[in-house]
Image 1 (tube, rainbow, N blue to C red):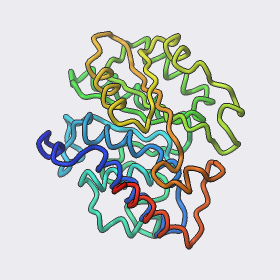
Image 2 (cartoon, rainbow, N blue to C red):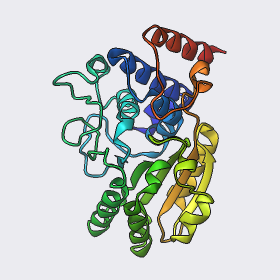
Image 3 (cartoon, rainbow, N blue to C red):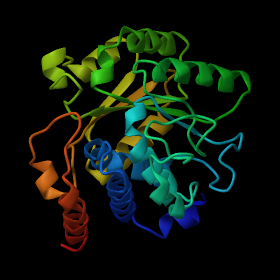
Image 4 (cartoon, helix red, strand yellow):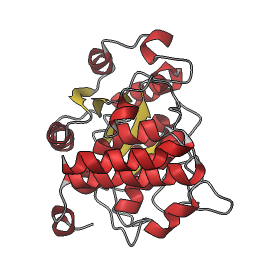
Length: 280
């Protein structure tokens, strides 16, 4: 997408539309990881409409930046962003999770335009990102690889093996994005396995670390800019604290769980609440 096309719409508006796309897909199936999608919408808006280099009409363009969704269950969030970016037609939204749809419940490479890897078995994405970065270095490409992973995924030893490898190979074309919402399948991430002080741990592994409010668009823009322009031969990580359900007040305050329950009569209420917040 060209810079001119991106500048025509504010990043806040992009984030709103990503959230709305996710809620509409959730309504189609009556379920989906919409809490996470609402939480990372600002991160995705800044990624796809400020930072990433890509061509919507040619998702396989060799010069593109790669965005890897290690947390495959966040696929509804990525699809929402890809629809907003024009990589996936909006009318496919209604097919989410259905038979023969290009939008399965978990992301699959080769099946959906713009989806670079099959995520879902947590702890794999960062290792794949390391391999991609090494390959791009060999090709003398200036493309970046972004990898979205979760705080719960930091429980996986393979994540830290990949982190060590990235530092060893001085992969300054790798930017990891950690969604810290303090939720995973077994409960609060910090209760399952403590991970603080998170920035210091990444730095100890040889990374340049920044911690930012993942729902603060100006702060995210500044952090992405720093990560891309840093003149140090090391990988970079953005640790993003997010709120599950962001943008829909009654979901923001609902008891948090890995899978937020949205009752059949609440999807329309959620869309109305999101719309009201947009005009407030």
